[in-house]
Length: 317
Length: 150
Image (cartoon, rainbow over all chains, first blue to last red; front, side, top):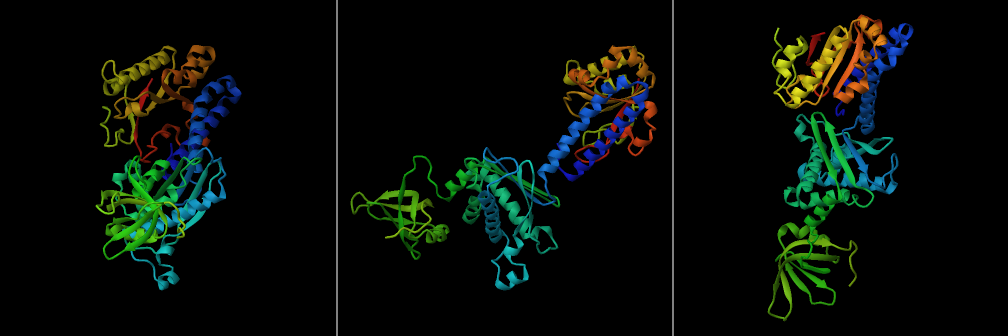
């Protein structure tokens, strides 16, 4: 199997040599002993076929000299075609995930002047769609022209992409292996949510200037992202209702379940931004439930461990 | 001359290293009953059969069998045969089967055969057939192969 341009070069050289040897033998035997040629040729033909197959497989997976390829596979992905909506969601999700990670690890949000000069975060982290490959669905994407730095480690786009792939591999191992932050999870979710029925795996592969990283986004990754973002585990006690109030002074909030009394919940600072974004939305929350003396039968969540938004649109009332 | 030691990457040093079948067996034959010994026995049986049929020439041995790999499964060989072999093959189907690809593959080794007098053929002068396996496909570094006279 060929996996690099240098291996491709060697394979092409061997292909040329085997073809030349075969042709020489054919010319040699054509007039003198043609009956021997089929037997002598078979070994060369087998090698040539194998090398050609390797070369074709390599070129098919690399439609362009782009550092990032994204391969989508699944029963609903037919060779050479993809639903336009899926392609748009995939490209948009990648763009969003990179921007989230670039903001986390690469520096400050861009200012207007940076945007005009093309050195802002959005300019540094843009993706250009380069090519699609026939025979399978592969997007070859080039990172937008970025400001060249003296040291490779300051290359924001490459760092964000490498971090994205690392985080996906962490999630493939286990939820506990994830070393990122909630904004990174939200970014990854935009891609992982696409791995569902009909799309079995989305493979991201990044190769550029000595960097090599690869990750598979599967439904398992999506489950773990949802869990880390607040999805409950099987059998876990949760409260479902509208998030109606947030008190940023004492780090508490109020959830109003349907046909039940309101529940006061205490939260840690790291969740505040997500809770504010979820205000007035229907959420599901898990944590440490503690009964309160009055009113009887009521409870409080003394520490929110996880929550997730069920309806993206704010609930009236 | 002795077969040189392996490099750090497990291959022989760059170049073509002359060796006898006995030297190949002593160096690469492995312990009795081992996978290496099985491959070596196949090589000995095949070269013995070629000699019995009067085939003369040069063998270029390649593949994991002549590397530091613990349990190689087969050997790859380029047979540079003296021209008389063609006459032998025409008259003796058994001799011809010794370089039959499917038959050899079934026995666990890969054989290519090339006429010695064709080494100077103009079309192949750009690429020396004898050196077709001299490069490691993964690292693109030159590596060594063995040459054994039949």
